[in-house]
Image 1 (cartoon, rainbow, N blue to C red):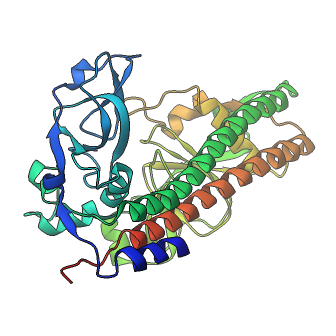
Image 2: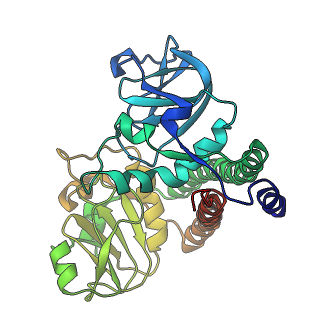
Length: 371
């Protein structure tokens, strides 16, 4: 960073000139449509949303910035170097001057384009990008030495994050593999298998549904207690409420959201009517162990909006045996340690992203010569 400061002081003491992108770059859309995508195509095909597909032919062979025209407006940018195809509603920004390092401009778009279009947009919500937004976007043009030093710093952050993401993917695959193995082995150790319906009849578990809690209810009674709802991502938190339904350890699941299962450790919380809940009523069955068993079975089921994961449905779907508490403890300990490692990597990625965004925004905030 000190090197960059020295370069700025030496080469840009009076600020940096900003130039409209349309004056220093070719900006336009592609010719292809989504139907032109093919599986296993040789060339990247950038469509109008974040997705990158494949194409049998290429339209451009260059270094450029590709920006989807819709979906995540002002937040999604692709840096491309080489042959690629482009959708009719995706834009390419290809610089016509050697005074701009394309990767430097890529980072500048990431840091500043969303704020720019929100400022110049006619309506409060921008749903798609139009060419004039791109042509008028101001780009700083400091000396190339400055641009290249900024790219070096930000690339280092990007590479670190990518290595963490790769590590996370590896650990998740390891977790899934180990979980299936240890659950299968532990369940095979016992011959007596109970369907959830039978386990509930014997008083081993209890199943139920949450209650209706709307956004309006939460706004009228705000608080610190999480409300969990039907969800296919995250931890299923819907909002924070002033009341709570439970303060014990349970399993919950999304009735509408594909039947996804969640382990809820003991804390004060509620679940909505589109979620189910399950308690374990005996001391020789761990809630966390049962969660891992049901999770392994859930992966082989298919719940959607026609086959919802109602308690009446899953009572007949899921079944389990109860191995010794020692076996359960061993399984939970092994899986918890792997899960803890995954969470620590996720936290590190989150921290690095915040750090990256901070430095990116700082490094790409230049005083204008007009100032």
